[in-house]
Image 1 (tube, rainbow, N blue to C red):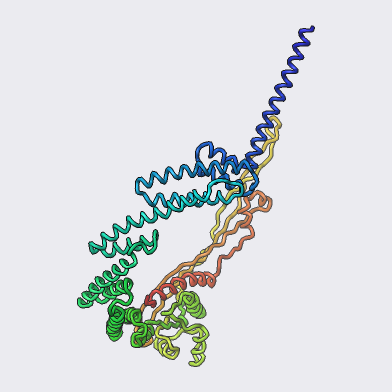
Image 2: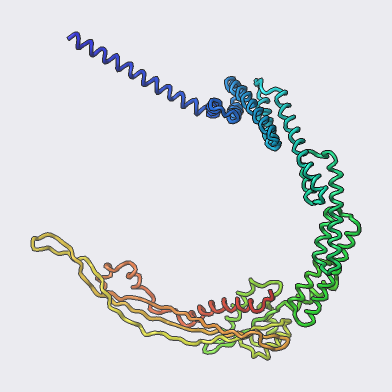
Length: 508
């Protein structure tokens, strides 16, 4: 019995020790998590320091101290990371100096001085001191000077070999490292002068060959090197004047021959070179005037349709075309066309013959008119067709054993369909008001159709119809009528007609 009690006592004690150990482990784990959550940058800094990634250790320590400036242990981490980082920098700088890689030294010194200066600004730090920051600054400046020295040697070589463009690029590059380095200021002036002289002569040769536009470009290069070189400005102005007059003469010849499009383009080029050339400006205006299409769409005639459809076609073409008008395509709007019709005592719905339309066009101030016709090509309304369809419902019954069951039982209902179809044609002609000539003659056909579907079903079976079929019980028994279908076809036809008319009349 005593042995059993002792054994139980030992088990209880062991369990208590185990529980305490587990609790302590949990508390320790919670504390670690808490510390990591409360000071994540500090923990990262410690790990980076341990892994000898001093640059990261510095950054993380600085981030931690930004919100915990009085954390002494973090300041100690920062001091140690700064020393280690600085030592690494010194080794890297020495390595790249031995390789004469001055750009790498400049980069390391600039980056290192920036982050170490930030570390030095933290209250309580003892590293880096002014000596370390001055060391990095001196390495940066000395390496820039050494890099400038390298480029200078190459630039002088180009200069002496007559490669002035390459030399100028190198001399300009030196400025990004050390301003006013040695005699680079004077060498830049001399190089620009030599480049200006070289391109000036090239341009003069091009002028003598009659290649004025290329010469102008090369003279512009000369001016970019030395703006007041010899008479370069005079040469540029003279060539621009010659080019402006040359394009003007070409454009005038095209205008006189009736090629207004080329006249417009050439007068525009003439103005590019001579904005003050009044004759070019006049030619530009005259060519644009000739190219501008002022368009009137007159009521169409109707065949096998009410005359109102002719007016609908012309009005719809106009409404669809108006949003796409440009500086070269203008329309006589409905209100102004109405005024002309009223002044001439003409019907606003009836179609005009072509001769009358041309005369009205002249009065309206337009140079192109659109006339045409709308025709009902065909109209067919079918007789109602009839189909017998089968539906099913669940019928209850008892089998021979008396068990309640269901089975599908068929029932019949009737579907009807009637359709209405039309085909409509639009024919339109573009006519020159000045000459009366037909500029274009186009014809377009379009069909429109509609069908009515409905069903008839015995009332006691209606509830067993699918939902889509039940909807047909109340469906219309008539398709769209003739007028609706004609309007539908006209909508589609006029969209095409408006687009084609604009493509035909637009000069650009």
